[in-house]
Amino acid sequence: MKLWGGRFETGPSAVFERFGNSLHFDKRLVDVDVRGSIAFARSLQRAGVLTAGELSQIETAFESIRLDAVNDPHFFDGATDEDVHTFVIRKLGERAGALAGKIHTGRSRNEQVSLDARLWLRETCDETMALLRGLLAELLTLAEKYPNAVIPGYTHLRRAQPVLWPHYLLAYFEMFSRDYERFTEARRRVNFMPLGSGALAGSGFPHDRHAIAKDLGFDNITRNSMDVSADRDWALDYLYAASVTMIHLSRLAEDWILYSSEEFAWMELGDGVTSGSSLMPQKKNPDSLELIRGKSGRVIGSLNALLFTMKGLPLTYNRDMQEDKEPLFEAADQVNASLEMARVVAESVVLQEAVPYTAAEESWVVATDLAEALARNGVPFHSAHQIVGRLVLTSVRSGKKPADWNAASLAEFDPAFTPDVARLLDPREGMKTREILGGTGPNTVAAALREARERLAAL
Image (cartoon, rainbow, N blue to C red):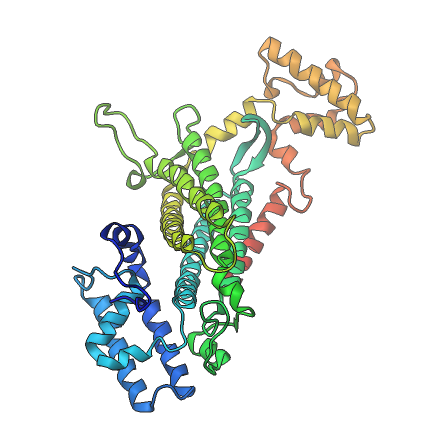
């Protein structure tokens, strides 16, 4: 059964049917399609199109469809309908008879598609945000397990300055917190009710749009019927938020793939999130993290796909816009699965505290601490930088580590090194000078962890 056809002498070709049908992917909208149709039926009753008895009959039929869709795994078997909307109307006709023909009174499939996708995406945002909260909580737990662990911080993948392990994890906490804000905003933007917009010019029936919005839990109604028919900004908002989240997950995955390798050996990943080799018995591969890193491309690709689809479309609706749902579904599936996987990986991490500390202690990550100490003692920073640079060069050439120097040998190297500077050869001491807000000073980091817990609890 088509929702259109009177103007046509013949039906669509079999090739066009196959090419244009979308039931195989939009059937996941069946629940929201039914819920939206029930709300529209109530509005039709308020507008005088349906009697109270007819509304009751339609609501009963719709609820039975909804229950069957949930409980019957074979509900869609054999269906050849054009899309989920046509499928639902056919099922309504089987259960409510000719009365089913009234449900589309004044309603366009354009606004119906927009409504269904908005309802689905609103709930998907909630799922994504819940998964983000879970990951944020696990990152804080992992930080709190090793509150005093010292690791090298990197720039250009070269050891740069010492930082606390919790400070490192709080960097990702900030990234994923911003992601949470983006999904919150995406949810806010999607939560406008489009029914009553018609195909593009508005409905010819006196619907109370605010009443429909209240019935479906929307914050407000859309403001322009043409915009509704043409708009997929709300889908792009979600896809952008999902893409940035996947970039952050991919960066975390890359870090932990490196840090768990034999070359770094900072951390060990649990058996439950790693796999072996079919040939090499010794292997313990970080496949879960590699999959997260790989799936980021699929999500970013989904964003690009819809951007390219929308970029040249004239107002208002064009069939190209049917291509919005597969990228949206794909991105949501991948970002949600990746967030769940990242949380489980974080649960499994064991930090080998001595290894990164040794890496910090044996390298010259304290160089900046030394230069800043000289500057605090009155040496112009450029000169201090040159003095410490020469110290590092001399040490590298002679194979000396920071611990091989002391107050006397530093003063002998250059009189600018006063006795108090020698303590900064220990990377733990230099961090104590960085108690500025946002820095890696131990007191500052402890306070940041407490604040992060409070922020998480408030989400």
